Length: 112
Image (cartoon, rainbow, N blue to C red; front, side, top):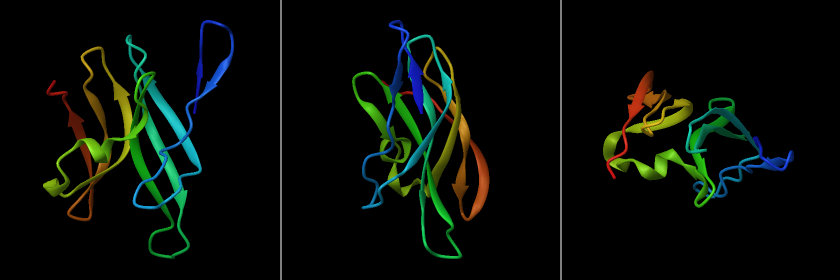
């Protein structure tokens, strides 16, 4: 993923750095809000027929860089957030993920 900045240059946003010892190779930005916060997904190929690839939703800002959204939710929720599709000016994020082995939509609302 890249961000076009005011100096007319592309800024590489990178990938999720290390999620459960998986090195992610690709990222896709889907949305940016008025504060410059970006959401999207990052991918890692896995060499199994069942998995195929690991996809995780991310949030990026200039201070924290790219973070796995799964690291910011309650791990006991049962959710795996796969792709963040949009973020609004209030920081609410919509996307899709899996819970109980089913694809579902999600809405995240910041608590702080």
